[in-house]
Length: 171
Image 1: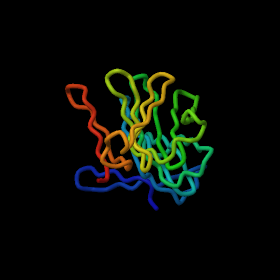
Image 2: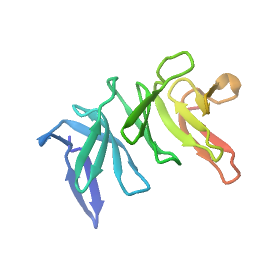
Image 3: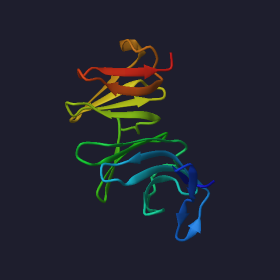
């Protein structure tokens, strides 16, 4: 695979995923342009994890402790930390520090497909199978179909101008 492509002026420039000057068989599955103009990619293949793309190449890569079967959303919070949801866990990158977030029972937060920080500073995590989780400080609350969601399979979380959250689900 080619890694990343840039479309400008009707032309596509491919940027292959490279590690130690060797092309890898990796693809950028999700991307985020942060507030400093840096491009982050959730990569899958031989280069699995989170990669930073600058000046025409992948310049930094963070491998994760779990095999990432499906890179998910990348999100930058107000404190400038980068959050990365995957099929195997939720991670926050702040400077050189990487933190894996776990549920109150100690298990990984799997299948995170949406991340949103609301105006109050709470984090909302949409998952593929277990509804929506809210992280408020050290409190963790889960909302599922039992609480009124149409489905536990979340697709998107959006906050409107009044501060109300909208949760898109499968059905």
